[in-house]
Length: 284
Ligand code: SF4
Image 1 (cartoon, rainbow, N blue to C red):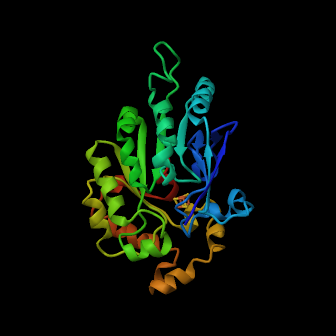
Image 2: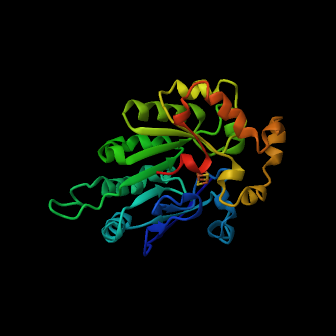
Image 3: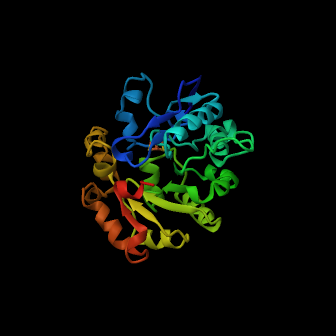
């Protein structure tokens, strides 16, 4: 699907966190809009997308001069107190355009304290904690910066199912299952704090938990439309997803109890302290 790009110079990048992301001081979205265009994306029902006049997934606004702005904002916010950042709440920071623009990469350099942004003797502007939420293998390009941020960063990789047919039905423009398993494995091997976000739970096979465990990760969060869309499922209900379950012959998975099915099988492969449900798994 062709994506219409616009270039904007925002007045701010850091947004005070609230609701589901209480626990962070800020959210950070390098882009507005998302070319992955997931069918279940709750942002479709938010004003930024709803009143845009273009279908979700067909437009992306690029935030220009973002690194300079972030450095300035971090200087200000760090003076006020601890800064913890969720990147990103309404876009994927590693959607396809990031390959060429390297905007997210430039923000990681700021948050890693690169010399260009943190000269010797200058105030430390690095956030205390950063969560990078993505479903894209492109995050592997930035392992160098992620390793420099070290124990202050967690990478959360969305993988809602191990069934490629299900992935194609719900998220046809998103990276395939095998690519995301590779991301989990590579980040774990790189010594980074990494989790799989089974979010939202989609129909999966009996082998899903075992497949996740085989990547070497030690942390998984399970979430669904009702707990995780910020409106107790109301936004997601308006997206009319039930026919997709019917098409796959998986209607029993369109059920508020479906997440427990996945959670129970994960318990056979992961210790209790590595398993989280909904909000708890996304907090710092
Ligand atoms: S990757 Fe995230 S932000 Fe982008 S469409 Fe999918 S759910 Fe929405």
